[in-house]
Length: 294
Image (cartoon, rainbow, N blue to C red; front, side, top):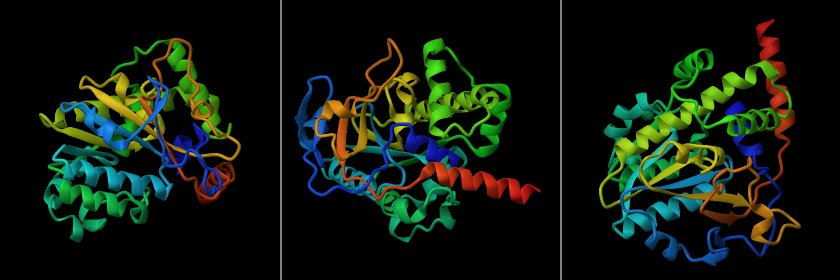
C-alpha cells in the first residue's frame, strides 16, 4: 500500500474521469514539443534497448494501453522481453515455466504478490507470457529491501540535489506522515530498487528487439529512476492522467531538481479514474498497523 500511494501521489496522478478531454489519447514528444502517432514512436524505439512505461498502478486505462502496445509490438515482430516491477527476481523460474501458457496462468502459479492487484494485472501479464520471448521479474524482495534500508544501496552517486529532491518527494508523497529520520533509509531502498531493475534490463535485453518495462512513474523517470542506471538505450513514456482545467501538454511537465535530465521522452495522456483520498487511506493503514501491534 505505501509503495503504491507513493508512486501515485508523487505526480498527482489520480483525478476524476473526464469526458472528452482534449488531450486524452494523445502522445506528446517532449524534445520536439509536438504530438506524434504511436506508429511513429514504435518506429523510433531502440532495437537494442527498452521502452519504459511509467504507469499509475491502479488506473485500468493504463493497463489497457499496455496490453494494446505490447500486442502491437508483437504484431510488428518488434517485441523483446517484457519486464515487470511487480515481480521479483526470485519469481523468475515461475515466470519461465509460465511462458507461452499465459491463458492458464494463475496468481498462485507465479507466487504473485497480493499487493499488486491480480484483477488489474492479470490480462497484461498473461498477454506478455503468450506474446513476448521472455517475461522478467526485476524487483528486490521485501527481505532485500529491508537489508538495504539498514545498510544502504550499492551505489549512491547521484549528487545532493537528487538526494534532497527524493527525500522531499518521499515525504510529500506519504502525506507528511513519515518520520523524517526514516527518509534516508527509504531513499536508499528506492535507489537500490532502481539499480536492481536497471541491471535486470541490461541482462535481459534481446538483440534487434525492443523490450518493454512496466513500472511506476517515478521508477520510469529519466531524472529519478531506472534510466539513471541503465546502460542500454531507453525511451521513457509517462502515462499521464488528464485533469480538469489543464488543457495543454505543458501543464503536465513534471517538476524536478536543478540540472536534472528531462523527466521523460513522451507523455501519453489517458483518462483519469475516480478520485480517491490516498492520504486518508494511508492514515487508516497506519492506525490498523498500530492497533494490531498493541
